[in-house]
Length: 321
Image 1: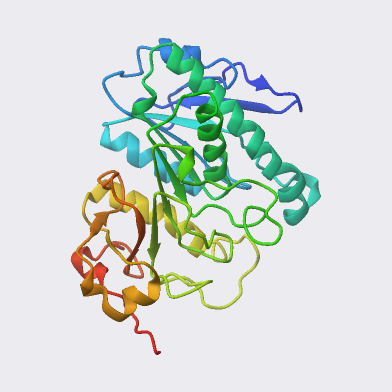
Image 2: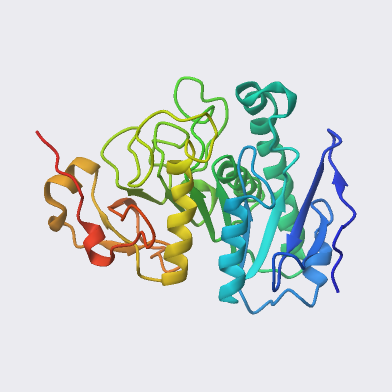
């Protein structure tokens, strides 16, 4: 039933990329080259009556990394969606170039190229009968922009996916003075929701989605409750704590349904000054209102369960004029 190793594909740089369909577990899956996705459409393990979520990780991410493991495990456990992983682990590495140079000259350009490749694969699946309206793309950090490129590639060809979720999309080279690449935005899918947990640092500080959710936001470089306030070793787990909160919040919201809600405000100052003026609220996760638009704010606990229910609509801090 399953091809555990899979005939990896090589792109024009000689790198290997594949997609994996995980019907029941992390360890048993169908793997096929990105440039030959038809085995996915032809597999009896793909339930065409269910929506499909396609997830990928970011810079220096891993197939067995904490984000990938947590996201896939959560969706597999719910058994309500087909779960597909885009594996670009080798292309996402810094390699011998070091963290900064590896990101700029290798990983970021690879994200664009592979995103286009994913768009092409999704078009092939669409032509094989998979409804793009049932496709939900999701990416963490640099992986969020990769998913945006996939959506853009499809839109340029008259097709569109229903939803892209950006889990703290990467900031470097995608915004600011040195914005050399197009970032994930609301044009990439019918609905784009973005969760900002490390704004102005590893994550984007701009509202570019159909909906932008700002947990615990009080200005650029806001910190998440429970994360270190002092500088940490670069790219250590402690250093990435705020950045990782995006997928941690999303998973909890997806599993709980209504545990994390957010309230509309034009900006964080309005939220802090008088959050009660707004009567527009949404749930983070799979129950999000796809008709909603704008910026939404919430507060969380410092440790799981992060969600505070309706109490999370209130800021945990006050703004001094």
